[in-house]
Amino acid sequence: MQFNSVDFLIFFPIVVGIYFIIPKKLKYLWLLVASYYFYMCWNAKYALLIAFSTIVTYFAGLFLEKTEDRKKKNLVVAGSFIVNLGILGFFKYFHFLFDNLSGIFSLFGIRLVEPAVDVLLPVGISFYTFQALGYTIDVYRKDIKAEKNFFRYALFVSFFPQLVAGPIERSKNLLGQIDAMGEKRLWDYQKIVSGFGLMIWGMFQKVVVADRCAIFVDAVHENLFAAGTVETVAAAILFSIQIYCDFAGYSAVAIGAARVMGFSLMENFNTPYFATSIQDFWRRWHISLSTWFRDYLYIPLGGSRCSKAKKYRNIMITFLASGLWHGASWTFVIWGGIHGGFQIVGDLLRPIKEKVNKALRVKTEAFSYTLGQMIITYGLTTFAWIFFRAKTWDQLTLYFNRMFTKFNPWILFGGGLDYLQINRDDVKIVVVFLGILLLGEIVRYVKKVDLGEYLWQQNLWFRIGVFVVLILIILVYGEYGIHFDSGKFIYFDF
Image (cartoon, rainbow, N blue to C red; front, top):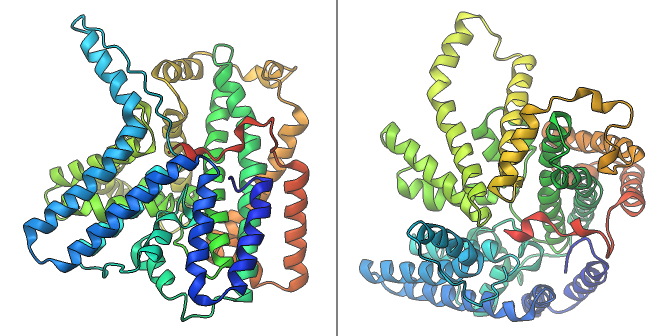
């Protein structure tokens, strides 16, 4: 069941309506049932995987709290990681590993016979696996106490708004709220209104902006042999917007849906394309994942409290792991490596940059300087997105070949883009909606609150007006329906 579906439009009001009228002691059980139903709408069999992961990490947490024996605790944590990452590895990386092994063996004249195993990636497995493993580590470190109620813990792992594409919640935050459901006031008109507003904004980002950008991006990638500099550069820029609006749109709907029911999920995006450096970008992009890798991989490796060489090693390991987390392809690993390289080069050049700015008397506090940093950072991240979007190495090399060897500014005139079969009126519409998106991002950047909270602060007439306009835009200009291939959220594949 996807957020941008009629099924969800029916499912969510029913779940929320029953949630608010049943006794408090039954609310977490109702949400657990609703969450498993939500997940089973994709593939009922894969609900067994999330249940198994829940059982393993639940009992691991209980054991970790009972024993003080360091060796036993280490074995339990290792066992939990091996089991959960083993399941993730099998379903997500089976074909990737087999293809790479086949390539290696073929160098020696050995041909491996591909096993007749049809391995499909269970939706959301990367997200709920990391969430459950984060709980195991938190109990191991004694940051939290082990959850005794199995069904409450099961809801923490499977909570439907953020189950299949995050945010990857921390046990301190979400599990604590689940435990407190029987004590706090859950009906909150302000949260309901701001949550509803955030859900509408997220749907606008997804079905209007992201899916309309996808039409042009997909057309260019399907016609790379005919494309040139103009089309490939435009596709790179539009893909950067597409993937942001697709993923941030999902997060907005997830956070908004949870807020309607009285839950506060962690922020996942904070105007990442206003970042002034790659390091700043990762403080704003997919925050739940970047902080997960920071707390559970980068810092345990030594973080930055070590020699520069080890610090750079830790950065590169973290970003390569992040790239591999995103997908079973070397293009994802390279994408992660590029971001790690950007951070290392940026750190090495920082003293030189400071000296140059001082020598040239650059006004680093001026808006123009900040704007320049934003433009450079956006350019670097957009360049890296090209690797992320490419499905194969051959497609990637062809993309760069078309970008740098076929300079064709004249194609903008006289119907040169007709081969892409893009309606020019649709292009104009996208430009208008990008303007609305930019306005929303500026509000978020300046006011330091998400759009749902900002609208709550406004007068009723203004709030209702924005709601009505956005809903009408979604209904009239949204890309959805059974014949629209890009309706699925991109991060469902991760």
